[in-house]
Image (cartoon, rainbow, N blue to C red):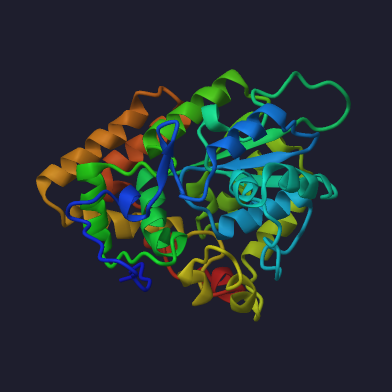
Length: 354
C-alpha cells in the first residue's frame, strides 16, 4: 500500500494536531494556504491582473499531476502530454506571484505566446485575477475557468498520495485508513473544505456558464478510451478547441512512450504509479477502490461522518455534484468494473481489452 513519506525535521503528532498545522500552512481570509503564500500578492493580482483573450484557468481543490499535463496540452495546442519539460513554466499563478513578486510574474506571463493555461486552487472570492470577467466583446475567445471536480473518494485519495510531496521536510507516515479517519474527525481545510470549494464553484458555473465549467475528473481518469474522449470533447467545446485535436490527444494519453518516466519525474508533483508504468491521468478506478476498501475497514462513527460529508454535495442541487454524491454514498456498489481499475499496461494491452 502506498505511503506518503519524507524525511522529518520535527516530530509530528497527528493524534493532537490538525494536518494544516503539521504542514505549517496559514490562513488567508480563513482559507489555509502554503506558508509561502502572500495575501498581499493575491490582493494585488485581484486588483491589477486582467486576463486576456484565450486564457484558461484550471481550478481544483485537490492537487493535479498528470491531468494538468493533459489539459495544458489541450489549451496550448500540444499533442504529446508525455513531453519532457511540458510543465516547466510557472503555471501555478498565485503561488508564483507570491514567490517571484507580482510585477515580475505578470511580466513573465505576458511574454507567453498563444493561449495561456494557469492553475490555482482558489475559491471564487480569492481568485487571483479580476473576476468576474467583464463582458466579452470581439472575435477572440473569452477567458475561461475549468473547474475540476471528482467523487470525494477520488479527491481525498489524491490528497493522501500527495501530502508527502507538498512540504518536503514534513513526514506523513500513516496509511489511507488513518488519513480517512483523521479527515472524518477533524476535517481537511487545505485550500478550504473540498465540499465548500466545489459548491462555491458550482454556483459560479450556474451564474456564469460562458466563463465557468465543471469538469468530471472521474471520467478523465478512466481506462475506457471512449469515456475519456467524451469528457474531453465536452471540455473542448467549452474551451473552443477543435474536436480533431481531442482525438489525437486521447490517442497520446493511451500510448506511453519509452522515456515517459524520465520526463514525468521532473514535475513538481509526481504520481508514483505513473513512474512505475501507470496511466498518465490519476487513475479514478484504483483510487475509488482504495478509498472504499479503507473506509469499509473503519468504525461506524467514521463511516457515518463521511456519509454526512457526501450529503453536503446533495444540498447544492447541482446535477454534476449530486451525481458525485450519490455514487459516493452507494459505496462499494458504485465502484467501476475491475476492467476499468487495472494497471495501465500500454497500447497493446488496451487494444486487447486487458
